[in-house]
Length: 283
Image (cartoon, rainbow, N blue to C red; front, side, top):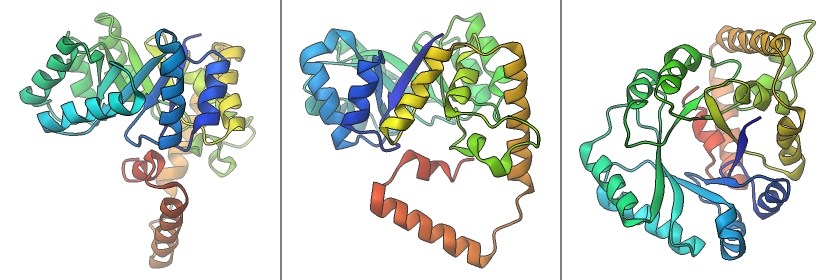
């Protein structure tokens, strides 16, 4: 079984970082939302175990100066000379030459060790699989979103380009009993991660727990190992049912819109702006 990468933007803090490290996780994604508590734990690990962990950050910027500043600020806050991975995030159009040049210069300076690109545009990722600038591709992949199996993974495997997957639980909807097919077992979160990691093209999968219990459940994926063909077929049926459930949902009325707006406002008040919240606009 391959690796899990702990992501910061769904509520994980120092306790989750420590538990994940204790249980063997060595890759940490201090993503778009660089939470202070998560960063403090990483800074402590960098001070004592720097050679034993890999720190990834990402940037959405289209400005060279902002890209450099993002990397330098992360290094300053973590008190480390370098970050292991810089992800050029959410690139749904050809990447501007000035950004590629800036990213390559960061690698040449030694303040970034490797480059990753993430996108929802699968044809773009397929083309980038052949680009030696990048060390890995980052793509949405789960039992309900399996298009990458056809549109990205063959090219990645052909060019020996590792794939980093995210949204393994489809923002929790793969665990929602209302969306599941009848007479099928309900998946656990660890089943969602096992499904993703069972694909040979996937090198690692992000997981974004909010609690210690969610951290432990995700890490069960590693203990339980790859899925059997029967389990993979079961998860595909679950994924298909979830997609049908989402598509069959009636349009939101004014009352529903107001309720969702209130829920989002409460979420921002409690947890700040999270990737889960942002993902509601790109499902």
